[in-house]
Amino acid sequence: MARILLAEDEPAVRSFVQRALETAGHRVQAVGDGAAALEALGGGSFDLLLTDIVMPVMDGIALALKASRDFPGMPILMMTGYAEQRRRAHNLEALIDDVLAKPFSLAALLAAVDRALQKVG
Image (cartoon, rainbow, N blue to C red; front, side, top):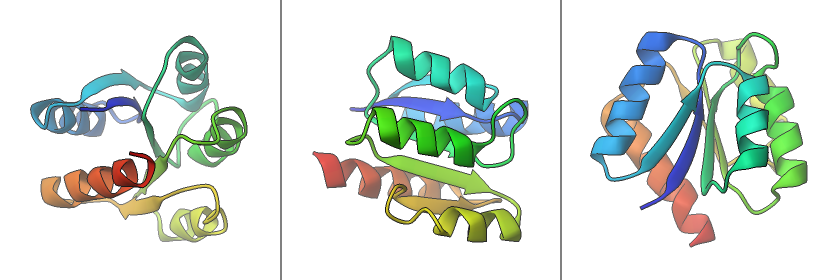
């Protein structure tokens, strides 16, 4: 399965998503903010970036811009609970694969991850 970098500042959501993806057979490295995610990207090889939009230190939009520049073939999925942030992310349609609206179901999460991974493999 895939190696996924998860960037989510809310511990409960981060834990839920990590467990769900690992149960589906993926390897997940989870971090709590965009700066930590950027550091992890530089030190590892990932098949997918799954990031929240609203996070401390560096938000998901800035992270997606940097990740798409440095790792152009890697799919990027974003998550948000804020409608206005969802609109901001859609301005990046050429760079990201999808935006999941929180709260999302386990099935919706896994389907979005599968769709994004199929585009590259």
